[in-house]
Amino acid sequence: MEKDFRKTNFITGAVITGIILAAAVMSFFYLPCDPNAMDSTLKFAGVSARHIMGCDNFGRDVFSRVLLGSRNTLTVAVGTVGIGCGAGVIIGALTGYYGGIVDQVLMRINDALFAFPSIL
Image (cartoon, rainbow, N blue to C red):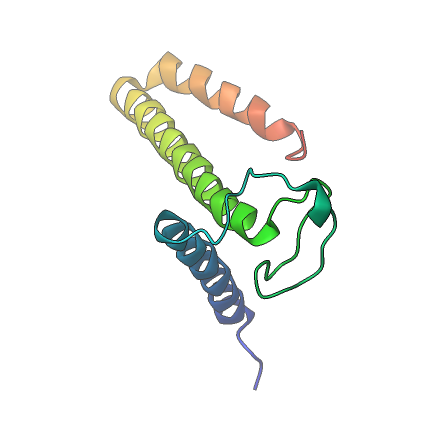
């Protein structure tokens, strides 16, 4: 029996999203250190009870910075999806309502956008 890779991919994506969401929610209530406070004596400090992911080259706590960064990551992700959905609904409504030349022009613009590689 073949394994269903779609289910595996969904579970993997859901777990990663859940971890980022949990970190973002946790950052509102708990930050072990100030993520922007620099301490030159802690440059590249290793893992310890105070800094569970160590410190970076400026002596800032990496764990606190990851928690704060997850909040920014989710904000950008949700905003991007929201803008994309809003633009898609508007363009789809215009092409569905007017049809004809408006539909043709908007579809050719869409085709031109799909012609570019996604890496750009």
